[in-house]
Amino acid sequence: MIYFDNSATTQAAPEVVSTYDTVSQRIWGNPSSLHQFGEQAFNLLEQSRKQIADLLGASQSEILFTSGGTEGDNWVVKGTAIEKREFGNHLITTAVEHPAIHNSMEQLKQLGFEVTYLPVDEHGRISIEDLKQAIRPTTILVSVMAVNNEIGTIQPLKEVAEVLKDHPKIHFHIDAVQGIGKGIQDLIMNDRVDFVTFSGHKFHAPRGIGFIYARRGRKIAPLLTGGGQERNLRSGTENLPAIAAMAKALRLLLTDEQQKVALQAQIKERIFNHVKDFPLVTTFSEVNDGFAPHILCFAIQGVRGETIVHAFEEQGIYISTTSACSSKKHLASSTLTAMQVPEDVSTSAIRISLDDHNTLAEADQFNQVFDQLYDKFKVLSA
Ligand SMILES: Cc1ncc(COP(=O)(O)O)c(C=O)c1O
Image (cartoon, rainbow, N blue to C red; front, side, top):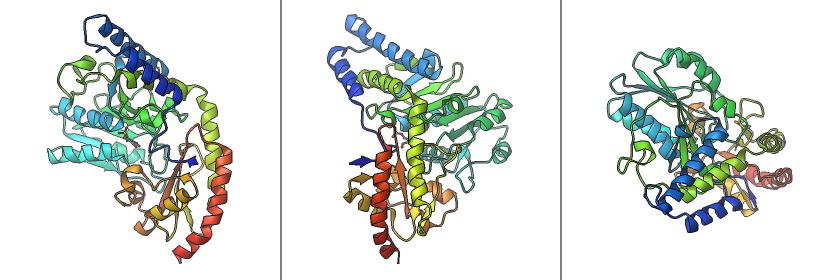
C-alpha cells in the first residue's frame, strides 16, 4: 500500500495515539475544576500550549486551541469582521483559498461586507501589485494561505507582510494548514503576521483538533461563547487528550524538519521528472522554491480525475483528485479554475501529497504503475 494523500489527512502516529490514550485514561479531569484532578488537567493543558508556542517561537498566551483548520479559518475571518466592523467592512483574500476561508467570506458578503478575491497567475500565485491596489481605508483583514492545498503554490508571504507593515491596523492572517513542517516556518511566522491557522490531522495528530496563533494585542471576537475557556475567546471544555497528542505530533514533525522536507522534495521531483514528458500529461505544480515539497498536481488529458484515482487504487496506490473536499462532489478544482485552466483539463487533474513517511522506493513504484496504466489512459483519452 502506498499512501500519497497526506494533504487530505495523515495517519495518527503511534506515539501520538499513545499520548492520547494515556491522557484519556489518567488525566481525565476538567481543566476548569478546582480540585486536584482539575489542576492536573489544567497543568497539562498549559504545558501543551507552551510546547507548541516554543516550537513556533510564539508566547504561550498566543496559542488558542480549536477543533481544526476549518474552525480556525472561520474564527479569524468572522471574528475579525465582528471585532472590527466599526473600522471597516472590507476584507481581502485570494481566489485560491480553501473553502473554509472562501465560504466564510461569502457568508460575510451576505451580511453586507465587501470582499476582494485577488486573482492568481498561471502558477496559482497572487501579485503584490494587485494586493497594494486592493487595500482600502476600510480594509480590516488580509487572509492569504501559505501553501495551496491543490497544487502546492507557496504565496509571497514575506512580500505581503512588507506591504502590510504600512497598514498596521489591518489584520494579517495566514492559513498554514498545508504549510507547517514543510520548511517554510520563517515565511509563516513572520514579523507582521497577526493570526495563523493550523490543523492537527495534517501532521499525524488526531482529527478534530487544531490551534491558531493570535499575536498578543490583536483581537478577534469569539465565535463560541459559553463557559469562557481559552481566556473567554473559545468556550467549550478543552479536548485535552487531543491537545496533548497534537503537541507531541508537532514536536515530532519539526524534529529534523529539513531532512524530512528534502526527502519529500526528492520524491516529488522523481515522480515529476518521470511523468512530465508523457504527451497527455499537463503539470501544474513545479519543482522549485515557489512550490511546497510535498504536493504534485498534474492532469492526464481526456481521463477524469476519479478514473485515474481508482485506477491507481486498484494497484494499491492512494492519491486524490485535487482536494478531498471537491473530490466527492465531482467539482472542478477551484485553484485550477482560478488559474484559467479549461474545465476539460482541470477535471482530469490528480494530486499526489507526501509526508515524512513516504520513500523514494514508493516513487519508483508509482512511476512503474504509471507506465502500466498509461496505455489504458491513452485508450480512454482517445
Ligand atoms: C489549506 C487548508 N485550509 C483549511 C483546511 C481545513 O482543515 P480541517 O480539515 O482541519 O478542518 C484544509 C484541509 O484540507 C486545508 O487544506
